[in-house]
Amino acid sequence: MFGQEKFEHINKILNRRFTEKKALVAVHRGAWGGNIVENTIPSFDLSIDMGGDIFECDISSSTDGILYVFHDGTEPLLLGCSENIKTMSSQEIEQFEYLNSIGKLSGAKVEPYEKVAAYFTGEVLYNIDRAWDCLPQLAEVLRKYPHTLNQAIIKTPVTEEYLDFFNNCREKYMYMPIVYNMEEVDKVLSYTNVNTVGMELITGSNDGELFLQKNINYIKSHNLFVWANVITLAGHGQHRLFGELDDDMALLVSKDRSWGEALRKGIDVLQTDWPLQLCRFRDTYFK
Image 1 (tube, helix red, strand yellow):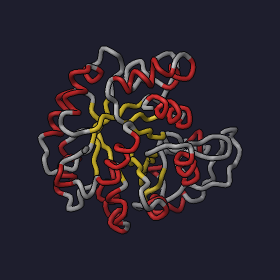
Image 2 (cartoon, helix red, strand yellow):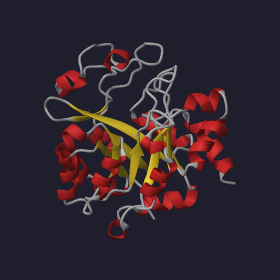
Image 3 (cartoon, rainbow, N blue to C red):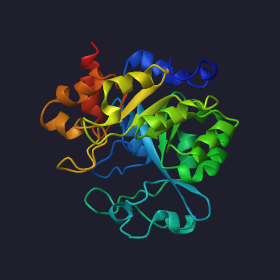
Image 4 (cartoon, rainbow, N blue to C red):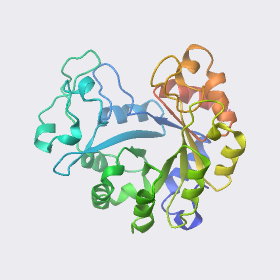
């Protein structure tokens, strides 16, 4: 069981999924390509259809406080503009039409997060990323849709401001800090009134502190899952998120040397851009 026993009623879907699958596949920005655009409901639906257990959605706030499912910084690629979405009003944002994978108009619009919260019910799990600068607004939306308490895993970097928010929030949302070192791990563990269910480990090399087996074991000994990003954000080993284990190595060299090694290290959630291939590997691995 992941998380504290007192929050078990909130974490029940997450823990049931781990019982069923042993390790979970998280899908980076949904499954997208062709005319299906990342961070949209169709991309999230497709990620589930491919076997993903969790999809990641990024959130940005407009200047008038409306939350949109969008990873800021991708405006030139997806909207054809250089202005950051966080500097735009909701009226400006809703005038845009997404560009697809070949730079043509897709017919899709930037979606308000509230639309996603209302659409995904039942036992669909998802991770909310990049919402740490608008946590009070996010909580307001989540309160309108009580089912999200059992579905949404919210992540932030480790700061006292964010930890205090979750500590003081009356709803004990599932929380996953992004940790870069053991000092941050211990800081999070000191907050016992936060529903911390797991930790996302960021380490740029196999020599990194959070790649060491003893530290992974330490985190897991506190009933927390360990999440690793095996996505490849850049070639030539740039911007590695979990040592040298990534999607490129899995797809181009050896799935077992990348995804398999992550599973042998006890990684509980692997975030990927290739959910179909990883789900097939995971299911075969645990046979």
